[in-house]
Structures are given as structure tokens and as C-alpha cells.
Amino acid sequence: MAAAYVLFTFLDTSIKYLALAGVTPLFIAWIRFSSHVALVAALFRGWQGTDRFRTSKPFAHLIRGALLAGSTIFNILALRYLQLAETTSIYFFGPMVITALAGPLLGEWAGWRRWLAIVVGFIGVLVITRPGIGVFGIGHVFALCSMLSNSVYIIMTRSMSATETAESLILYSALAPMILLTPTLWFTQWPSVGLLQWGLLLLLGLFGGLGHWCLIQAYRRATATALAPYPYMQMVWVIAAGWLVFGQFPDVWTLAGAGIIMASGLYIVHREHRLRVLNRAVADADVAEVAKKL
Image (tube, rainbow, N blue to C red; front, side, top):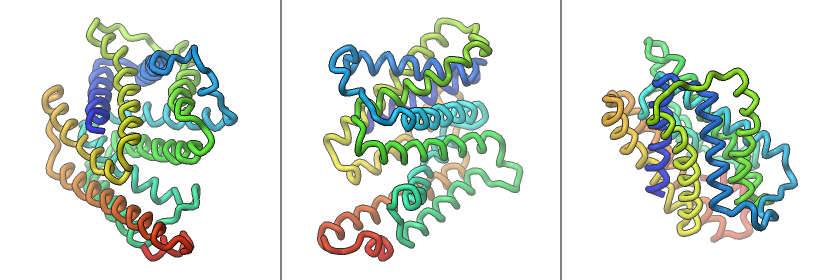
């Protein structure tokens, strides 16, 4: 899990560097997903055992891929304007959005304590963005759109994981965006950059694909509850990367907001763990009623 979020930090740092170098967001996203597809095909030996990649829900994969493409493009646009720590802090609000959406979309309703944690987490977002005092800008809008799109993408992944193979979910999450973005190459200016920038472009798929592979390996070896705190370690990496590569250090408001969001997220993890324990202890209890008590 730690390796995964180091790789994701490399991914975001490279994307921000490329965006500031003038590479268009659509081209960055297309290269990122195309190299991801090539990496997945190589890792899973896609030319062998194609049954693993068969799906009965191609349209759902297309929608899921569009959500991931939107999340990626909005993130690239956000990184043009914001520090790495700012975009990452807003992304940390994602688990709370997922908890809120899981009720109407998946039937997994949250209790009042978790809703209170969601509200506190949103206050953390407000501390970072500070709307109304001249701080909230287009970069924050892009970051919020990216986080929301990614949250719905994760909801769809959870829903589809009951019927789809892990290999198909990994492959089509990159293949669908690649296909959707390919027509944009006709009116997207190809970058006139040096070898360093082209090298980073080709590494985007490695950082993203290998990072997701590390996540899969982590969840095979430990419970979700045990791994839940580790994504927040990324804040350390993005602060270090922002300072070393871009000479940027987050202000006290960003750090305070990130702390509020992380505390709220960890509290939600704690409550959901309590719910699972209680459901196992009281097998006949109605899940919805138990959720209300938690």
C-alpha cells in the first residue's frame, strides 16, 4: 500500500510537470491510458486466457471508463493551478462522498455519526478552498470535479466487482478511456517537448498501472480496515515532491484542512468496522437498523 501511493505521487508530480511544460491535458490523459493498457496486457499476458477479460456489461465499462477519464482530465487541469498537496487534500474527501452516495446507489446507508463525520470532512474542504475570501478558484473547481467523478467511478467498481473479473476491471478501466480519447488526437496539438518530457509521458502508464497492481496485492494480503490509514501517507510524499520539484510548500490552511479531512475519514473507517463486527455478532439484525444505530 505504501508503494502504491508513492507511485501515485510520482504520477501526479509527472502530470503537473508536463502540464506546466505546455502538454495538453487530453494528450497527457491519452498517453497515460494507452501505456496503462500496454502494461496490463504485458503483466496479465492478455494474449493468453482471454476468458479473464470477457464481460457481460460493456456499456457499464464504457461509463466507468468515461468517469475515470473525466477524473484524470479534471485532475490534470487542477494541477495546473494548485499545489500537489491541495489537490491531494481535496481527494481525501472522496471516501466521505462515497459513503454518502453508497446509500442511494448501493443501498449501504450511513448512520448519523458517519453523516456527521462527512459534514466535518466538508468543513475541512472549506478550510482548504476558503470560498468567499478570494482563495477559491478554478483550480479548486477542477479538483472537486475530479474527486466527484472518481467517487462515482469507485461506486461503479464496487457494484460491478460482484459479476466482473478483477482482470476485466483493470483492463477496461484504461481501455475505455483510451478509446474515448483517441478521436481527440485529431484536433489535439502534439507536444514539442524534449526527451525528459517524452520519458515522463511514457512512464505515466507505469506509475498508474503498477500503482493499481500494488493496491490489488495489498488487499489480497490485508483487510481493508487495516489498510485504511495508509492512503493518508500520500500527504507526506506530495508535500516532499511539491517542495523538491516545484519549490512549493502548503500553507497552514491547507495543512489544517487536510488534517480535518483525514480525521473524518479515519473516523468513518472506524464506524464501518464497528458495523461489520456488530453484524457478525448479531447475525439476525437488520442491516439498515444497525446502520442507523451507528
